Structures are given as C-alpha cells and as structure tokens.
Amino acid sequence: MARFSSSHFREYRLNGEGTILWDKTVDECIPVFSSGKPYYVDIFDRKAVNDEEEIISRLHRVVLDECSEYLKKYGLLDLLSLEEIQLTDERREDLGEDEFLADAVFKELGSQYNTRNQILLETLYSYITQNKVRRQEEQVSFYGTTAFYDVWERVCASVLNDCLRKKISVLPYGSFPYDNVHNNKTLLELIERPVWRENGKEGDGIRAGATLIPDIICLEISEQERYFAIFDAKYYNMEFNEEENRLSGQPGIESITKQYLYQLAYRDFLREHRVERIGNCFLMPSEGDSIILKGRVTLQMFQLLETEPGLVPIQVCLLPAGYMFDLYLKRKHISVRELGIRF
Image 1 (cartoon, rainbow, N blue to C red):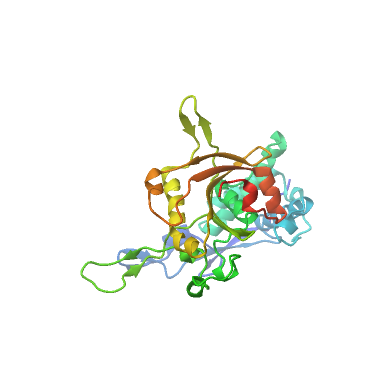
Image 2 (image 1 turned 120 degrees about the vertical axis):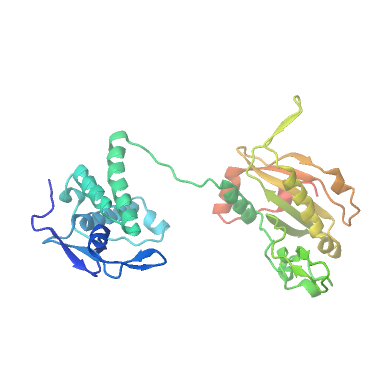
C-alpha cells in the first residue's frame, strides 16, 4: 500500500505563497486592529516539500484523467465540446487503495481554510467513496431538470415557428400603413408597457420596463386569409370529470386572464392587418400519438368587452410529446392549422 514518502515534510514560511496557517499566524503574529477587527500584516504559510509530488496533487491528476477517459468512452467529449486530457501516467491503484486515498483527502480537508481547496477536496473525497459504493451496489444515477415546463415551451416555440421576437417587416402579412410606424419593432415590442406618473407632476411619466410576455405568437397566411395564434405552453396533465363536476391539472385564473390580455394587447395590430382568423390556446403534452382538442375556457367579463376583433375563447390542445420532440430534434416546423384549433 502506498504511503507518503519518508522524505515528505512541511516547510513553514512567513508571508509565502502557500496555504495559510491561521493557528500559527494567530499564535505568533501581532495583528493590527481597525474598528475592533484584527488584521494580520504577517502570515505563516505552509509549503509541502518532498521527493515526489504530494499525494493529493497526484490523485487530482489521476481523477481528471479518469473522468476524461469515461467521457471519451461514452462519446460525451464531443457532445460537451471538451478535449481529451492525459495529465499523468499513474493509475489510481499506483497511489494506494481507496480507503487510504479517502483518508488522506479527509485529513487534508481538515487542515484547509481556503474555500476553493475545500471544495476540490470534498469533490475528490466524494468521487473516491461513491465509486466504491457504486461498484458494490451497482447504483445508477439520473440527472435532469425540475424546470421541464421551460423545455416544453422551447420545443413548442421551435416547432410552431414562434414569431414573438421577429420584426414586423419580415412577417408574412404583407405591407400595411400600420407597418410604416412600427416596421422595425418586434411583435413583443408592440405590447404596451405601464406608464407611472407622480401626482402633481406634468410630463409623459415613467414607462416601466416589464410588460406582458406571451409564450408563443404564430402568424400564417393561406389563400389570402391571415391566421394569428396566441399560445401558452403548459406542462400540465389536465383531466375533466364531468360526473363529479371536477377539474384537475387546469391552468389557474391568472393564466386565463393573461391569455385574454395578450389578444387585447394586439387589438390594433389585428385590426389594421384585417386578421379574422384568431386562435388562443393552451398547449399541453400528452403520451398519445395524435393531436386532441381537449376543451376550452371562457371568462364572460372579457368576452363582453366590445373589441374589434372580438375576444375568442381559450382552447386546450393536447400535443403528442414524442412527436413534438422528434420534430424539434429534426428542426422541423408544423403549421398552426395542423393543430385543428378553431379560428
């Protein structure tokens, strides 16, 4: 079993560049006090001197080589845009058994005050001890994200060819007088921002930076008919139970009101471009293999508003998750008319 070299020893220095020895510094150095706090002008540090390199440094290089070898074996180097490394010819068994290495790392951790070094040593210790557990118990670890709703939103935006951040000048509706003023704006920039005014002050007020931001806006034109769709990607599993008059997994009232407000925000744009085919819809993933219109929701107080064009009910569309992810990975798009929603 490997051990530290017999010629291994510690050299203590004053104001060197090694690891700071706070116990020795506090005991032997006189601090300067400022505002009741001690400041040490002189500090003792420690430098390891040995015929061979320190065991921790050697272990660090070995572990990095192992990780690089593992990533290469499973084809992850290219995926993560990493280069293969080989820092040493040593193997971990050359340094000693895992119990010995873990003990050496743990002892070193107890004498470290540098945060970066502590994190490195903790990682090395975890790597060594978890490797042993994994070999004994054949454990499998899975990694992912708890914010999968964000993934679903990005997939839907890509597949449906989201236009929210596209300039009006490149949209398919053609040129209208309305565009002469707003041509260089994006659809997102058309949404009104709140204006704050202080009582007793004249002027234009202060325009807030934040405003409504829809998930997805889609524009299409077919046979001279203009389609405009407002989508909210929801990673929900909605269920109707008409027998018990009960719902589960449905969007909340704030989501419903925002969908109506999105259409109101584009009222002038829709009117000036003579858009009559308007869809407003929640998009939810399903495990099926076909697109399903699950239902719709209305809020009468909004639909009573006299707007031109009028506000439409908000539909619920279930999209096959596997199909959508396949399209996303192939960078393909589908028309909003293929969803079968009512315009």
